[in-house]
Length: 106
Image 1 (spheres, one colour):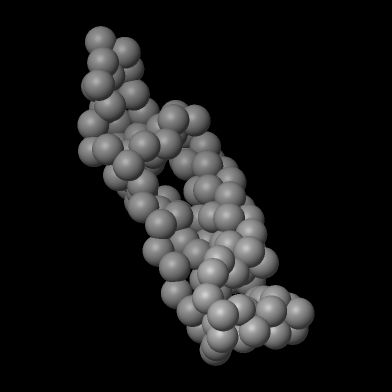
Image 2: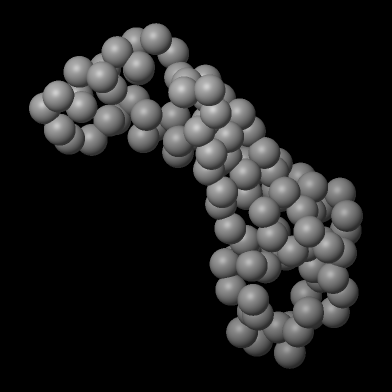
């Protein structure tokens, strides 16, 4: 599965468009990460626990995006984007979305 943020793929032609697909995950941060983030905000610096959580969330969203595209018969997703929203103060929603399509090499 080719996933790209570009609207076109050099050396390929979009043969068929299957429509928008997305992969979504919602995760909560555990109390230890929350406490660590609160302490780190006093001194500054990277919030490593939260960074790891976001990386894992994006990977999970990409895996779900790929599965959704494959289920529609696509071999590529173009114009892929991430959207992240904080919900309820301790939950993060990560959505990967794009356009599922079938490509042919020129």
